[in-house]
Structures are given as C-alpha cells and as structure tokens.
Image (cartoon, rainbow, N blue to C red; front, side, top):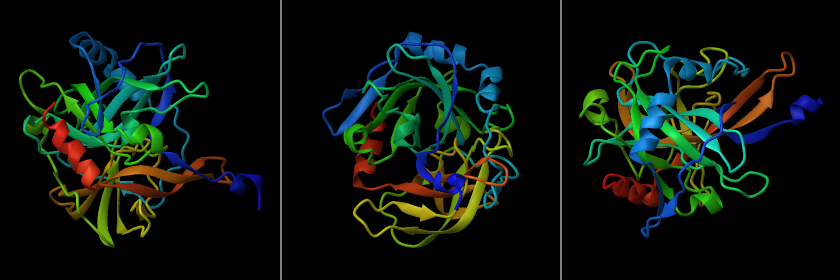
Length: 307
C-alpha cells in the first residue's frame, strides 16, 4: 500500500479560495437551542457588491479534484429552489477565504429560507481556537455556468443549532435571505418540500455543485442511488455518491422525479471520505454522508421562518 492510499480522510465538502480580509458578524445564542448570525443592511449590500459574476466563477477555477465517477451531470433546468451559496470565511487577523456550498429554498412563512449544511454557516475554529466566521453570504438559485436566472439574494441571517459549534451535530443550517426587488426567493425560484422523520433504506437523488474538474462548481451534478441510514445514535445517511467539495449542503431527495426536478428533502450533504488517486495525484471523493433532518433540525427550521 502506498503513502497516497494511506491519506484517506473524512472531510466537509465546502470549497475555499483565498481573498481579502474582513470583519464578520458574530453568532449569538437565540435562547431556543439555536445560534443566529445576523447581518446589517450595510453588510448585505457589501455582500452583493462583493460577489460579482467574475468572482463567482473564479472561486472554483483552481479546483483539482478528479472528475466524478458515480455522479453525473444534471441535464435540463436546475431543480427548483436549488442553487449555489457563496460566502467568505475569516478568523480575526487572518486572510479571508472565498467559498461556496449548495443550498435549497424550502417553504416558510416569509418565503426567505434555504437549507444547507451547518459548516456552511459556521466555519469552526482555527489553530488558535479563534472562531472562523462566515460573512458576505449570498444565494444564487438556479446558478448554471455563470447564469443567474432568478438573481442574487443576500443573507440577512444564518441559523444553526447550539450543539453544532461544540459537537458538529447536527450539520444543518438555515439561511434567511433578503427579498430581491420585493420578491422572495420562494416566489421566484420555487421551493422543495422537506421531511424531518424519514427513516431506513431509500432511493435518493443527491444534487450539488461540486468543485471537480468536470465543471469547477459551475454546474450541478447528481447521484441516483440507494442510501442507508446508520443504526448508531447519530443516524447519518450513507451513500457511495462521489460529489466533490462544494456539494456540501446539497439536498438528498426521496421520491425524486428527474423529469420535474422535484422531491422530498430528507437530508443534506455533510461530509465525505477523500483520498488521492495514486495514478494521477488528483484528490477524489469516495463516498458521502448526509446529515439527518430530525427534531433538532425541525426546531431550527421553525425558528428560521420567524427571522
């Protein structure tokens, strides 16, 4: 066995690239089991100005991940409500990083909520135990090769569970968006239904914007396969899907119809096992885990609809 084969790790699947420094907002406990990061009007305007079409394209341009072997390109219109979530990350005194995940608009009282992974809203800690804050967050539903058919929506709040910063569970977050020209994301891009009690083995359509050499994050790809929920207390969903970094937060659909691009979201992409292809030296994703949407995620979802 070669050294390259030993370099097998479990990683979250957001993708980052260096950028300029910033001073992010700070998440605060909401008193209901959730933490919420809010952005001022000036913050939101800065986010919209920052994420130009050129910067969106550039964030994935240097990706080196191997083209997916299991996942395949999505053809036709992007599934309704699905899009790319762009943001920056920085700890105090560090250079900012451009990054992206995948997210999906879901029904809410405000029409402004999208679901994604927890690590797309909270960046964890650096080596000095400083919080890596998420800032300049915008959502582009239907993103495809630079096209923005429904516009760009700035995030006004990021919400995740209190348990996530300390235990990395559940790896689920809700992003609450500003309306754009008076229009809510649910109205212009549509939504996907979500389930918080899906169990057992099921067929899944897994969609994401991976940063592999196939499209460098510029187009969605998907897997259509059987997935199984683990029997331990965490209940993570297991799959052989190989979507690369950038697919984090992407929806796992039950009862998915490729013809209509609709289904029932029961999980979001959380992390994957990565290795290095010893013949080419390219990073590769071997499998994906999905975060379960359980009672805690349901409480988060309910709270986000009131932000």
